[in-house]
Image (cartoon, rainbow, N blue to C red; front, side, top):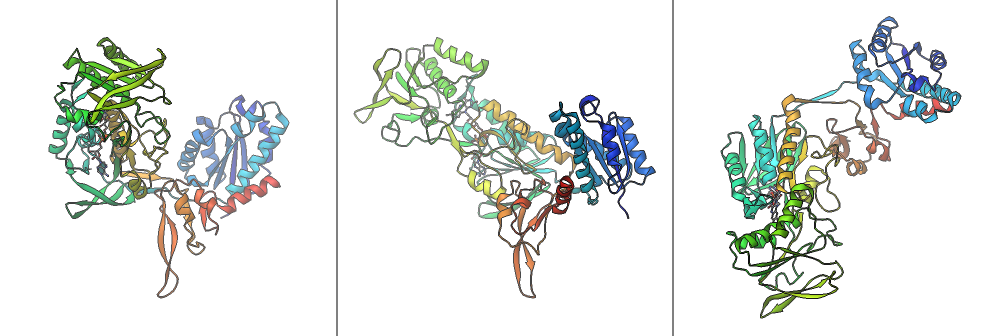
Length: 564
Ligand SMILES: Cc1cc2nc3c(=O)[nH]c(=O)nc-3n(C[C@H](O)[C@H](O)[C@H](O)COP(=O)(O)OP(=O)(O)OC[C@H]3O[C@@H](n4cnc5c(N)ncnc54)[C@H](O)[C@@H]3O)c2cc1C
């Protein structure tokens, strides 16, 4: 069948029409090879414009449509859908951006802008003539989720999904649920017992008919993609294969142990905040003089980030010490006070009112622990405002340390091809626009596995990850665009560059039979996971990879049209 192209050039009000002389571009488009119809519209995206496209497809038996208007970001789906309504495969549509790529950037060069618009339309038409019809890909999504980690983030996500009727496989590495909070006695900012918060969640998860909890579970392998993941999990020397449609990573983080710093590990009365919470679960310590040192292991070269809530943890334990014994002398040595938001600022003020002393130190003059009879006896600190050293007697020294990545981050990152950032925590697809999602579809993140966060944030992220995971599960299918990459196995040299470069983990090895008894490894793309970004095609030295809709032939046709 011969190629019959229709070109629709939009004025976009004055956005394009105020700079580009649209009638001239339309007249030019009508002269291009294979173009059988060309028209201008005031707004091609209006119902008038859209119905005109549909009518012309029928009247002129158009089998390619080129719209030269604004940005594909907002309007390409609309025009593609419109082509489908007229019975034309949506992949036979080509978009030319005359607004951002032409009119807006050449506002004061009307003649040149009109010439450039002609060039862009000529390129679009050259590509359109080579377009081929494609079909969207559709995959079934199992209504179940694998939640990795049974802390407050994982519990929040698991319960949200379970309440919505989805099955949850909850993996917990240890023999108990609750994560770090099992060792935390009271929680800021309310100072209520942690058990009041975490125990009902644990009980609900254990009793919920939609949640299967696996304790002492070791994740060995994950295969598959959104809709149908298979996790091999070792539980008590038995290997289970769990099939789920989505995955939520909530493996939390661990408290930094400051071995060798500030006499930690040398004197028994030097401990971390978590050690303190474990050692004195009732809150009654009998300690009269306590010195806390903040920012231990935080905001230094190895761990350059701020632990986010460490200052608040120190305030919590300082105020609890003062509540238990108002006569106790509690001093917090800090580099800065990070009390973000209204609630935590009020919490800080409360600690000050209760008589907790806060003294600032600078990183280049850190506090010094002075030993006495095999214990920490006092802490020497240079007081910046007084301009001299102070020596504070101490029955106990509590070091406030940040959370650091849990041990399994790297293994999980490799297993699921999910990214980790410079600090070793998992990195979401986009901090602001896709905060609990990974670039790979169907895998989500919540809580301290992402970055140190206090309970309220962890719960919110657990809910958010559950909501994201529920979306494809509720639809039952995911439909993905057909414009993905394809490997020609005969051209593939098996170098593996594309496997390493794909940010979505969409490329894997497959065996290619090259003789009766011989096979060789070549790359293969999973179209459901591929986003069509083109990195693999650009990096392939053998020219074995093409992106549908952006093949070498199509791009070269545009380049030749631009040059001609
Ligand atoms: C000393 C201290 C005091 C704190 N006090 C407060 C407070 O008062 N108020 C407040 O809001 N926050 C407080 N926090 C912070 C709070 O502990 C965290 O916000 C919260 O515990 C994070 O929950 P999570 O589920 O993200 O991670 P975690 O609690 O770390 O839970 C992660 C879970 O995943 C499991 N896991 C790890 N790896 C795997 C794996 N590969 N497979 C399966 N399971 C795995 C772990 O065993 C754990 O059970 C405190 C933290 C500390 C250290």
